[in-house]
Image (cartoon, rainbow, N blue to C red; front, top):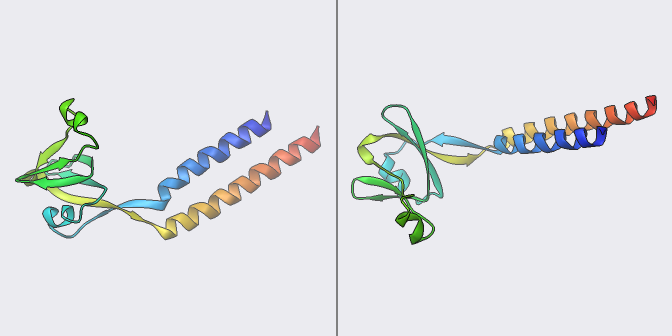
Length: 125
């Protein structure tokens, strides 16, 4: 029973720590210039403060469109877009080396403690 809980805790810690490896970095450039770099995903912040993450965004005329993987996605109404005039800021995903190191060390320490606690509870029986 302890090994199941320990394994689940380790799995949850590993999944949680993946989020520390990357972060959204707001770009200083005009949205059109940022999107001209053809990022794989971008988080657009609207004038009203709401956010929208688009996969493979591209500028077409006066709008930002999400480029579907296949033509069928667009035909099913899954194409998401917004007007460039509604975009306040654009953020791109960036690697965070310090967060990655800190979360890896924290995860290792917690995992070591859980293994030690499981071993000690087995001895008490």
